[in-house]
Amino acid sequence: MATNSSTLHSEAATPVPAETRLTPLWLFVVAVLLIETAMRVMPEGFMTRTVQHRAEEIRYLPPADVQLMGDSATSGIRAGLLERFIGQDYQVSNYALPGTSPLFNYFVLRRQIAAGKAPRVIVLAPHPFVWSDPLLDRFLSRFATPAESVQLLRDGVNLDHWLYGTLCRFSYTLRYREEFYSAITTGNLTFFRQLESSITSVQNTRAKIGATEPQPPLPGKSILDAGIVPPVLSAPIAIHSYNELYIEKFFELAEANGIRVIWLSLPVPELLLDKPDRAERTAVFSAFLNRMMAKHKNLSAISTAVPTMPDSYFMDAWHLNSYGAWVFSQMAGEELADWLKLHSLSGGSALP
Image: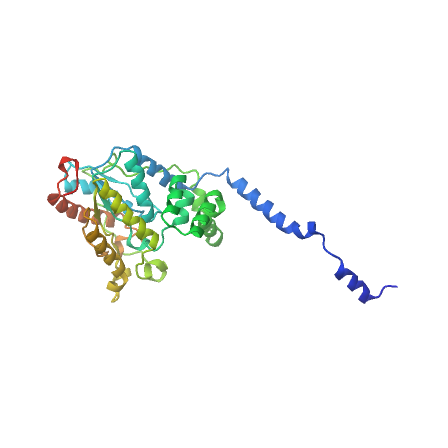
């Protein structure tokens, strides 16, 4: 007659079949494969499609005399206003790509030059606080060609970073993990609502500001909340090694092709830099630009300091509103006009 203790001993000693032990793992693997397979029927995100389309447009649109490059903050600069100040003899196009880092600029310019669409002057104006993150996984998963992916390895990008970005390219859920996380934690469904939205074109010379367009109304007060400023905007400016590498390669590529680069420092709200430690927070940024200008004869800067504008000129901590963009575009237009008086573009070359 079996006792309780013998029964317990017998149960503990009974081995669990390997098939049973593996079942949870296989169920997980199958679930992941099913989810990824289902996701493949979904279109790419709105911003991904927009950036890819704009980058492709840059390769076939007629090259501009003056070309703006940067990120979403740069998109607010009004090409038409710049043309009013520098004169209609020069065409200005805004080829800023939202959601990108300085790393992207180098590869976009490579594509443009390969297509024979190089501009004469590039006004480079990425937001000063985007330098800390190269967005490498975003570049690899949403933008890079196979050849560009290989180029990253040749340039010494960390293999672990490269492998993760490549994995994101093949996984829809990893590629848009930030958007999914936001939807789950905050209920923000913008990503899903925009899946079928029409993509937007680059702001090129075919879409100029009309001469009779009224000035945007002056904002009454700021809508910014100093208590919810993103952490990256609260810390001193830092430059990731990948961004530093590719922004210098950008200057070298431009110089090798006779393209002049003008650095335009974008403004930030006063609440970010209206503090005693302003110089310390922007020291790395200014020092890098001064070092690059000393090294590359094709690079000059309208200003190496990070300017500020009233908080009421911004729609959020990153981007100017319509009035702020109007004001800053006129300021930049005046400074660019002064630069062009000293650097004629006649003769097909922008280099001295």
